[in-house]
Image 1: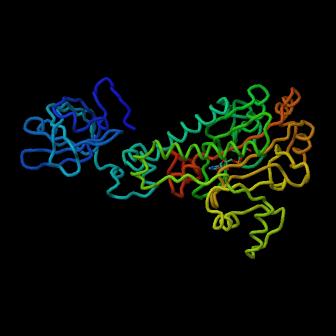
Image 2: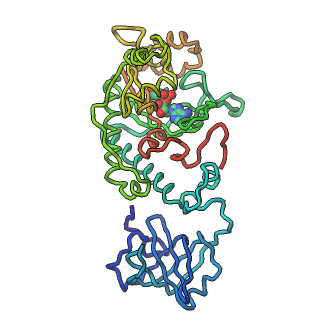
Image 3: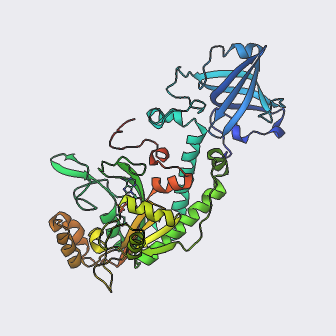
Length: 433
Ligand code: AMO
C-alpha cells in the first residue's frame, strides 16, 4: 500500500525505497524495531506503516542514539547503499538521526509478536498492537473492504446516509436496548438504522449506511459485540430477491477487491482469498428444518434455529448460502408476509457456514398492516407514531438488509473472533480502552 507520499519532514515512506536508488539521499522516519551492535557499527531496523528498512550507523551517528529503546520514534537522513544483509536488498547509511519520542520499557506487549500475548493484553494496548504487522494487516484489509463496499453501492446508485444513534424508540422492537437519560427524557442507543433507512427510501430511493450500532446482549461469543459496525441498505421498488442479488454481488466484488488490492496483507496473514461460486445456494427455512430433522434433531416448523442447529447446517453448507422464507413470527415487525402463505415472510439470512452475516427482507409498506403487526408483537404503535406517520406520505414498496461488517471480516481473514477485527471492541466485559 506504499502510496507516493511526502510529509513535512520525510522524503519517502520506507515502502517506496528500492535498490535502484543507490547513492540517493533520503529522509525517513518511523519506529526502531531492532537494534544490534557489531563492533564499531550499529544496525537498526526501522519500520513505518508501509515497510521496513535496515539502517547502518557508524561513529558519531551511533553515539547520538546510545541508550535508545526499541519502538522509539526516530527520523534520519541517510544514503541508500548496497547491503550484505540476507533479509534486505539495500540499506540506508545514516548521517544524521533525531530521536523524536522515547518508548518507555517495559512495554505492555511485544509489538513484533515474537512473544505472543493473549488477546486481552493486546486489546489493552491496542495502539501499540497495531505495530504488529499481522494486526496492522487486518485493519488495512478492513479499510479496503469498506472502500470496496462504498464503491459497489455507489455504482448501484445508493446514496450514503447518516442516521441518529441517539433515539427515542426502539428500532428493532423492545429487546437488547441500551437506555440512558437524555436531559429529562428516556433515550436509547440505536440497534440499527431500520426505521430511518426505510423512511428515506421515499425521498432518496436507494440508501446505505455504514455505522456503529448497539446491542445490549450479554453474549460471550466470538461473533457478538455490544457495539458493532453494520452495513445497511434499503431500496425503493425492490423486493427480497432483488436485495439478495445486491448482497451477493457486494460480497463477490469485495472478495475480488481484497484479492487484487491486499496481496501484502494476505501474505502477512497467511491467507488466500478465494472467490466463491455464484449464485450462492438458497435453501428455504422449511428445507433447513427438514435437513435438521433428517439428522435426527428434534425440531418443528416454527421453531427458531439456535446456534447448535446453525452449526449443524454449517457442516453441510460450508460457504455462503441464504436461508429464505422464515416464519413471520420469527422476524421483526417490519417484514412482509409471503403472498401465498401469510405464516411465512419474504425474508432471508445470509450465512457463511454456521455464521449469520446478514438478514433482510421485503418490508411492509402499508401503515395499517404495520400498525397491526406492531400490536401482534406486543409493541405499542404510539411509540412508533413518527415512523408510522411517514408511511402516510407515499411510502414506496421497499426492501433491504443489514450486514455485520466484523462478522464478514472474520470470514475474509479466517479467524473466529470479531474482537480481532474491530479496533476497540465493546462487549459485556470490556468498556475500555
Ligand atoms: P439483525 O439484527 O439480524 O438485523 O442484524 C444484522 C446483522 O448485523 C450483525 N449483528 C451483529 N454483529 C456483531 N455483534 C452483534 N451483537 C450483532 N448483532 C447483529 C449480524 C446480523 O446478521 N434491521 C435488520 C436488518 C435489515 O432487515 O435490514 C437487523 O438489524 O451480522
